Length: 72
Picture: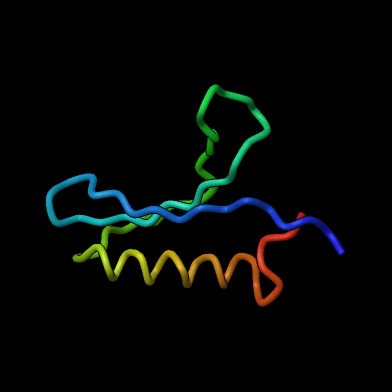
């Protein structure tokens, strides 16, 4: 079976009251005391609450990677 990719989900408030989910993937780049991530996908339209954006981000993960999760 292929290896599981290291994917993170975060929510950003770019303007007051406008929340966007962002999917990030860990890179192999080495930094002291930090694990760098690069954006791989983000919401195009804002959500009205943090919670709504978070749920939409989880739905995006499920849609992108299916039941087996993000495998390379």
